[in-house]
Structures are given as structure tokens and as C-alpha cells.
Length: 341
Ligand SMILES: Nc1ncnc2c1ncn2[C@@H]1O[C@H](COP(=O)(O)OP(=O)(O)O)[C@@H](O)[C@H]1O
Ligand SMILES: [Mg+2]
Image (cartoon, rainbow, N blue to C red; front, side, top):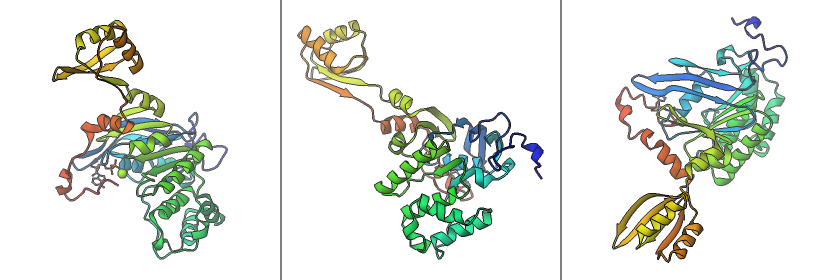
């Protein structure tokens, strides 16, 4: 049994479980590794997730997001490395369910049970007061459906119920695995607003998705993985700036002179190819209007001048292109492939 001596920092708020000198709610993965047979699902993954902001956990299907989240909340054991919350492993937390709430599988409710009864049952078995059931029902906007059978719930309502269950212990850390999956735009907006609220309250919010577009408007910070490995760890803003490197497409029958003008101005011709006597140049480092001015001042004819911005989705695809798990090659090996969710 873990005695109180193992939690010297836990003098105040009971169940908040934080080791001495550690930031409460800080998630730390260190060289986290998980294998399924020959398959390395999570591969020496290290990152931290800070409280007070929404951190997007991004990666294509099969990247290892769900496995990592299961490791963080103690549902799986790592083969190597560690995952800690406030400096403690999940099994060291005094009241784990009051520290970490997780939405991992949305469909864990008994279909014949009413939503409120389902939450009451969970509250009772997890040692939380019954009033928490009503509080979390209000929190996720399910009051009108509180007595309806869970079996008749839409996917959006099921997700809300799952989030309500995760909030029962008023946890400081929330792990949400693809909460937007299958939701309509209204549902996605609700989840987004809810996560931002939780972060604004100072909680740690780690939310996974395989959709860059969804995360770019939700998350403050992004951790991108592919094939179990870390690909990027940056603020969303930084990520957008880095990945939307602007270029301008210029088509001209006089590439040699234009090239000179561009390089003299400090620009770069990233690529050039030609067809039918007209060259297409991809120019970086100078904005389109300035290229037009330079061309006009030297009477260089332009056939086209088009600013190009790589979309975030494109940047993400590019970033993870080598790490997408193709086909179902692993499915044959003992039928262990659980699928992407
Ligand atoms: N219980 C399991 N048994 C065998 N393979 C698994 C199991 N869970 C996950 N995997 C495999 O590990 C890899 C990562 O899966 P997962 O963590 O679900 O990825 P993601 O959530 O990013 O889609 C995939 O190849 C998946 O098939
Ligand atoms: Mg998953």
C-alpha cells in the first residue's frame, strides 16, 4: 500500500496528488514506449503538457495517440519510460479519479440506463457525492435528457455524457480522445468551447485528433506524433507560421531578368520550370505586390502572379506523410489490430 509518506507534497488539497516541487496538473511523458507484439505503438515519446491551456495531440490514425493516453491514465503499462501527472505515476495518485478525468471510449454506458442513473452509478462506485451527477449533467447541458435512456442517445449526446463522467471528480487534468469524432458542427463547437473553458479554469486539457483543421482552432499548443514518435511540439501559432511558409507563383517569358531582380532584392527562387516558353517560378522572401513592382520597373512581362499559402491541413499531411500507417498489415498478426480508435 502506498502510505502518505510517498506523497510529501500532498499536504493541502486532498486528492490533488502532486509530488513536492512539481507543478500540479503537469503531464510528463518521458521516453514512453509501448509494444504490441512486434508493433511499436509508442516509441520513446517525450513531451510535457502544461496546465491552463488546451494541448492538441495530433497524428494520423494509428499514430499511437490512444495508446499514449491510456498509458498516461494507467489503463496500460509502458514497456519502457514513464508517464507522470504532477510528478506522480497514475498508480501513485491518492485519488486518481479526482485528479484525472478521461474520455477514452464514448460507449461505456449501459444502453438501458438513463443518463442521470448512469452518472449516479459512476459517482457512487467512484466515491463521489450523488449531487455531482446533477452538477455534471448541467455542466455538459444534458439536463433535458437526464432521464432518457442512454441507448437512444445521439453520438453528440453520448460524447457529452462521456465528458460528464470524466468531470465527476472535478479533475485538474482532462484527457479527451478524439472527442469531435462523428459530431456535427454544433457538437464540435460545443466541445471546443467546453475545452477552452476548462483550460481557462487552469486545468490541463489534452485532446487528441487526427484532424489538423479541428485542432488549429481549438488548441493553444500542439504535440504531433507519427508512428509513435514525436514529430513536432510547438505552439499552434508557431506551427501555423512555420508551416505556412509563403511563396508566390510567378509566370514570365523572361525568367532570367526577373530572377536577377528578385535575388537583388533578397528574395529566393525556390524552383523554376518552363513550358511553351513561359517559366513558372516559385518565389519566397518577397511579397507578390513587390514582385509586380520590380517586374514593372524593368518592363518584365508577367503572365501570372499568385500568392500561395500552404494550408495547415497540407502542412500536417506533409509533416506526417512518412509516418502514416498504410493498409492493415498488422491485422493478420494475431488479429491484434484494434483499429484506430
Ligand atoms: N490492444 C492492442 N493490440 C494490438 N495493437 C494495438 C492495440 N492498441 C493499439 N494497437 C496498435 O498500435 C498502434 C497505435 O494505435 P492507437 O494508439 O490506437 O493509434 P491512434 O489513437 O493514434 O489512432 C496501431 O498500429 C494500433 O493498431
Ligand atoms: Mg485513437
